[in-house]
Amino acid sequence: MKYYTITVNGNTYEVSVEENTGVSSGAPAPVAAPAPTPVPKAPVQKAAPAPAPAPKAASGAEGKIKVSSPMPGKILSLKANVGQAVKKGDVILILEAMKMENEIVAPEDGTVASINVSAGQSVEAGDLLATLN
Image 1: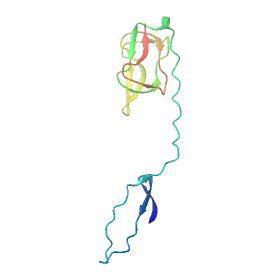
Image 2 (image 1 turned 120 degrees about the vertical axis):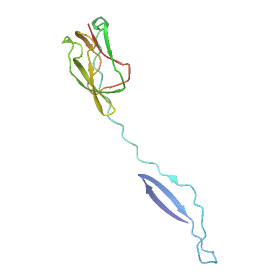
Image 3 (image 1 turned 180 degrees about the vertical axis):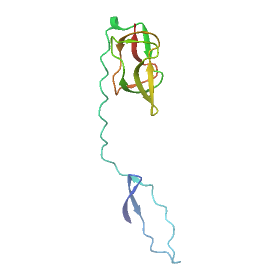
Image 4 (image 1 turned 90 degrees about the vertical axis):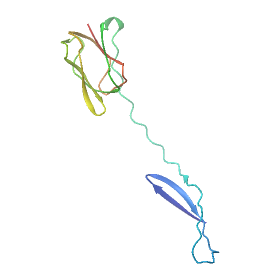
């Protein structure tokens, strides 16, 4: 019995191969090898923790016009600040989804009452991003 360590696509396996010495035809007989046994890998380091979300505005400071995420993604940058006047169509923030930058715009004229996310934060579809008055 011979033992080999084989690496395939980054996975390491220990394989044992049995030698066949009693064959009369001169050709080695096929031998079914046991299933490879995976060798445990070193522990994988976890990714750095996600940045803390921006502090949520107090419930009294939230505006009546809600701006929600249309899709899951990651906030790339904030383009408006709390207290800033915006017109319909002005960019409030940039959301990256599927390697595309999407401008999230003000649905109406108003003043930014709260920004409920921070740059680098992941969001799901329907999450509250900001509010306007």
